[in-house]
Image (cartoon, rainbow, N blue to C red; front, side, top):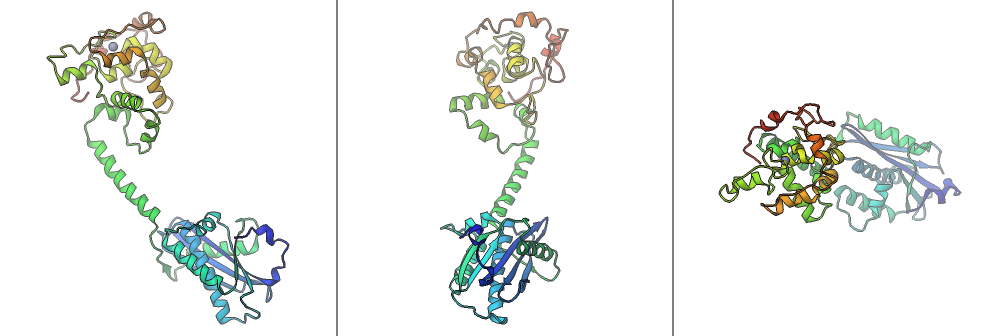
Length: 362
Ligand SMILES: [Zn+2]
């Protein structure tokens, strides 16, 4: 591999230059190679290209362009008056994709097209002094421009379509899409009221945000977001004899459950407003509502001794500290609303608060 800079001062008359390119636009894929022998003429001597099947990736199209370069050189040595062609002749293949050049120099190659390309280059390297060089695309280099135009031209050709081996990345993408569709369908039909309030649609990257935390925090967040949290309502569902009451120990106004703590409990309204940005809400902010819904904020809201204590001790009656105790002045202004409320309502409406219908899930 040699930088193009080292060739700037060389006499191109002693070299054969082959420019290659691959092009993909929607389902139209093509590749090309253009050969210059400046000892004969400064015009392109041979141009080869092919339309490739629509499943071809850009990476594969670039590789196919290099395969065409090997073919174009073979064509030149067989059919043209290639005078003075020997093992000392320098042949430079110019490619405008650095990732492709890098992948060809890897010790291990996993792509069938890349393996074929490297074999072809190895074979070509025995017949001449072969150099692979990067050229900046769309920089005005004549050979690169011609190869680029030819690749685009061939991508619309009706003559023949070469079936490229299906890329592993494409297979993985199709499998992921297929199973995500099944997952989404399952998710839309399953009855998980609280989890689905937070996650109306599946989010395949959410776990990455969640797993940044330690296992205790992950457990806390999962319990509160799914509703399966060791609060009085859930405990009573498990065993009503041992846990006869389901009343919230903080406010004594509603059932003590995750959604109550996160959205309704009047004793936590100031904390909710300060951290989550709303006093009350009848529905969790959806996962797409990034202003209101941030895992970091939910974690910060829950990471509070009075909330943590509820799960630890069934009989504990947490007392809010001074910073949180100003809830009482706001309590008289409390009202549930149909959407997220960022300011306390003027009127108290405890009826709405108590009219939340029981749900089979926590
Ligand atoms: Zn409460």
